[in-house]
Image 1 (cartoon, rainbow, N blue to C red):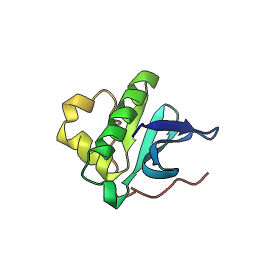
Image 2 (image 1 turned 135 degrees about the horizontal axis):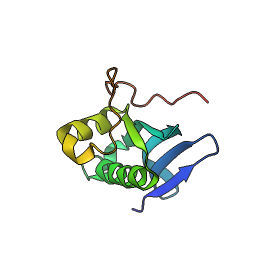
Image 3 (image 1 turned 60 degrees about the horizontal axis):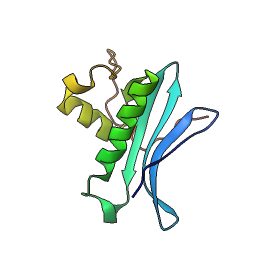
Image 4 (image 1 turned 90 degrees about the vertical axis):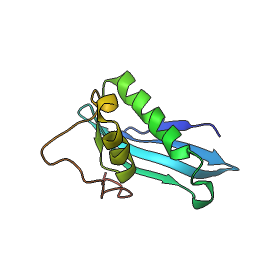
Length: 111
C-alpha cells in the first residue's frame, strides 16, 4: 500500500492510501502561515492495527520538516505521538499556552 499525497489551492491536504479504488486511510491537514494543522487521521476498521496510521504520521513529519512547517497536533492520534516522544518532535511541534487537546480529530476546517 503506497502512500499518496495531495494538496489543493486552499492549502487543504492529505496523505492517504487507496486500495481497490477506494480510500482506506488518511491523515488530513491544512497549512496557514507555515503552520500545518494535522486535524484528522483515519484508517478503515478492517485495516487497524497494521501500523498504517504510523506510516501516514511519518510521512507528515517528513513533509513538515522538508517544508519548514510547525505542526499543530489537533488530531488525538498526532497529539499522542508527539506526547510519547516530545524530544523527537520538538523541532516541528508548535506549542502554545492553549495547545490543542486532540478533540478536533475528524472535524474538517471550513474553507
